[in-house]
Length: 168
Image (cartoon, rainbow, N blue to C red):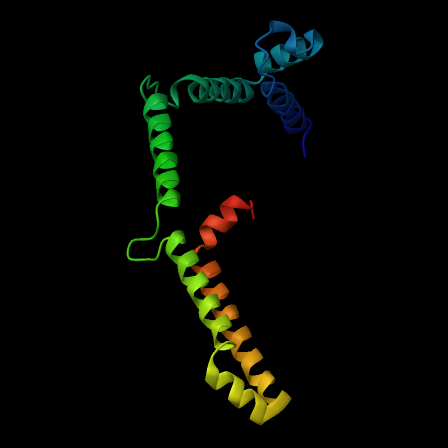
């Protein structure tokens, strides 16, 4: 690598290093560095052109790249607000065609009352006395299976509400 290309590379590295300083102060680049770059660009036309192109590109990206649109922010914020309100109303309403939470609670109470009422029926007492303790296992498994299935269906159909309520 020749001394000229090494010097050019060093000057361009200094330009790129101090171009990230967006403070807007003239003193952002050290004075000696400014002198060194000025002297180099006075003798090296390639670096002068490259620095000029770099500064023009940087200025275009800084000012003209994004078009000014005064109503854009308001329209974006209005859309975000509308989407948030729509999500909240969807969470507050039951799924169309689904059973609302009140219906699930009523159905659960009916299931529990009907399962408990089995123990008080006349047929249950006669079967329980004939079978003995062997009869309690199938009754207990049936009772547990019905309650588990009901709870699984209830939780599965209200998963969004539970995740939102318990922040899961």
